[in-house]
Length: 97
Ligand code: FES
Image (cartoon, rainbow, N blue to C red; front, side, top):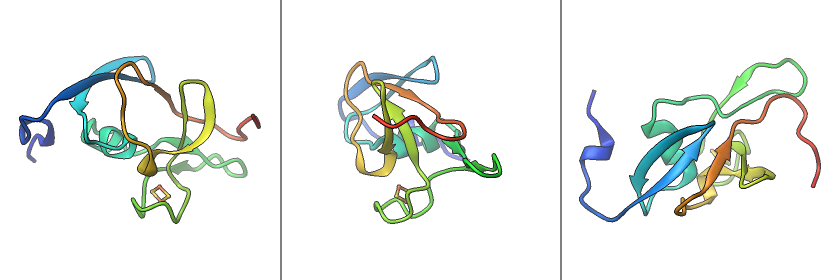
C-alpha cells in the first residue's frame, strides 16, 4: 500500500476528522481525505445502522454524507477541504438544519 499523502508536494491544509488532526493536500475533497486517512465509513444507516462510506465519488449516491463545521448531510465527495475544517461522522438519523 502506498501513502497517497506522500505523492504530492502541493500546499496542504490542516483539518480535523472525528477529533483527529490531519494534514491533507489542499486540492482534496473531504471524501478523499477520509479515504486517504484509512477511514472507509463516514456514517451509519438510519434504518439498520449499517456502515456507509464514499462510493461513487461524484455526487450521485449520497453514501458519503458527513457533518462539516456543524452542518449535517454534506456530501464529502463534492466538498473541498479547507483550513480548520471540522468533519464529523454521522450516526443514524441526522438532525435537519
Ligand atoms: S460518494 Fe457518492 S455522493 Fe459522495
